[in-house]
Image (tube, helix red, strand yellow):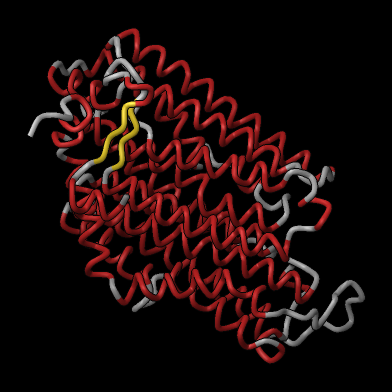
Length: 453
């Protein structure tokens, strides 16, 4: 589909034969196509990983049913061109993800699952209220039709109530400041396979929705909303990075870094230039790969040493140099070390911020990169360089790892390297996606007038 989009332009499909805007339309543009490719890659890696790292009892407890249900929900959310259909796919994602969090039925998982479900249900309620108001004001929920109506008849005061509800709903899904507290309270509780899946896909769907809505049809009171997004992006980056620095549990460190990295994506949307949005898309795709990989490696460390607590592990550099090499690749990518993917993603965002004279936002981005560097150095020093704390009887050393255990991490590491080495063509794709978002005339025409030349 990606190559079809490159060759033919935006693809559309009217479900059930109902022409837009009366029926549900599926739309794939450059952004959707790129997100689908990376999501499929993550699902492939997690599928292999789950065979070795999900307990057999969990696999027999319908893990794969909910795993692929969540995958279906993500794919649906990335391809729909209808706001209500997006709500439906978000509910599919929510149900499947809640089932995956509590798989195992421990007290910690149930507590984490309740916190996750409660706050995300609030987000779903606000989403439903927002789309109800939007339908009452415009008479449509087709995204292209909404863009056509709202761009032709700008009514910022009238539409701002709906915008605010969607903003909070997607802010909860994306885990932005100050709506992120559910994420670190729940992401460390399930099996690491589930956490890696969530890290790669869930919050990114929320960011995708924010980018789609605020570029396509919530374009009325732009100065206010972009300023709000800039403030939230800065706080999300800095607070997530600071919180990560205070922890010693690998899962909690990486969970807070999910939050800080979301801030970079919102930063690109807030600057709202083609370069900035291209940078946000580049960063989102890079982060999906690198962040998933760090969680996969956290599971490998736990498998080898028996703990996620950095105070209880050590000596991995001598015991397993391959794990050390595999960890350093996504860690350096997240920090932004050239020539890995994270360097070019951050370079695009910082360059666009300087060009837009958003110096405070640029300073927040650079400071957050320092927090990320500190956290990754802490993991490296504690888990790899420090001597193995043999005195702890709970540590299980030298569990055997075979090639297939490491294969998913190797695949994602190679992609991170490839995205850096081939950054120029990859940037071309993301810039094309950004241009489609900022100028949605082709999107509107392909959906509403597919027969037009």
